Image (cartoon, rainbow over all chains, first blue to last red):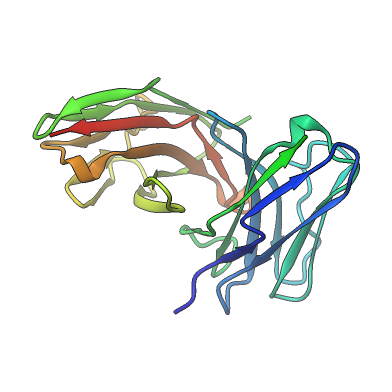
Length: 114
Length: 113
């Protein structure tokens, strides 16, 4: 079946602009996660959604970052007033439920802020 | 808080050499432990996992044993192949944190023929 998909695959933007990144999880997966991978570093957790529960936003680095999810489907990560330090690969993952051990990752969106 | 420390890379080996990538963790309670792999140009994928102490995860010739006494989950393979060249990430999760993953910084492995 289809895996996790993300769009766009690459995004180049100017400092100060807003960007929106999209994630389509695997159908039926109730848990969805966003991570960020800066160059040469490991992945850092940003936010996760589990069904209709309130999302865990504890990993968001600033109030310029926000994310939404419609039911158990598509999620969008929005970064307002982008800064150069926001340049990274943004990865989305989904799993059957938050207590399930395996997360399936999308290919990521590479964001470059000039 | 939770953290994962991985052996620094990059690691370069010849084909058929023995591989060890060290991973230690800090966490309260009983985390699940994982190794993820990222092949060139591909997305991150689960390589193996272990959910409790003394469990051994294995896949594609790779193995790792959950050692609670040393808080370690070292990755090993007896004979590496060129196709094993990739970045390897050690990670942990705790169900009480929604199973979000805490990753190490990754180890780049290059296997030469």
